[in-house]
Length: 200
Image (cartoon, rainbow, N blue to C red; front, side):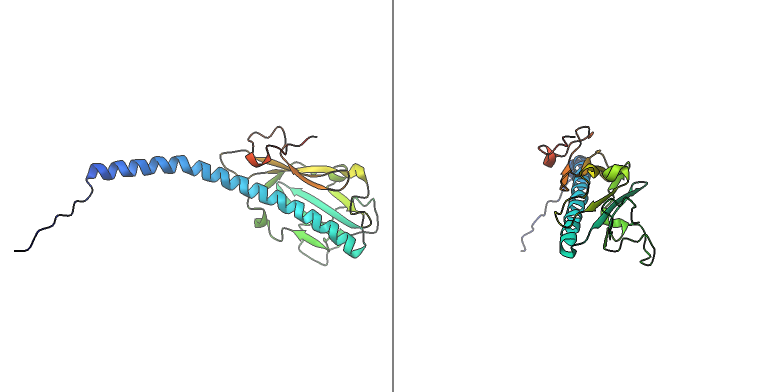
């Protein structure tokens, strides 16, 4: 005679409790994940700006040529462009939003990002203050710094939309060094920048 085996399954109550626990975990985890994504996108954009600035300094040294760096903010959309210049006091921006390479104001050395999606939802707040609020600074190929130390300044980057309001400043100091720091008045703080608050 065959032996009967009984397989015990979940009761309806056990299944409902499991689903309730899973729903609670999802509700708790999703905001944390979205905030993590905000921090990652913002930090990545700020670090990319710093890297692009350092590449422009290196390119000026390599070419032994004055290079004009332009940061433009068009309703939150930010671009970074580099073009050659012969004037150490040049304050005319190249148009890093311009796609036509034959245009007079085209950034002829480099542009970042090539497409707006390169920012991953990160936007800019206000006018970049470099170059007396023109967003333009000229790199001296002999020293690798900026030609006019009074052209130092910053642009504030805002995290993509989400539960937190994270902000970082991309800052060019008087020596032409790129600094990424967190504004003291940022509504939400990023743990990675606890020791890197903007001093001015």
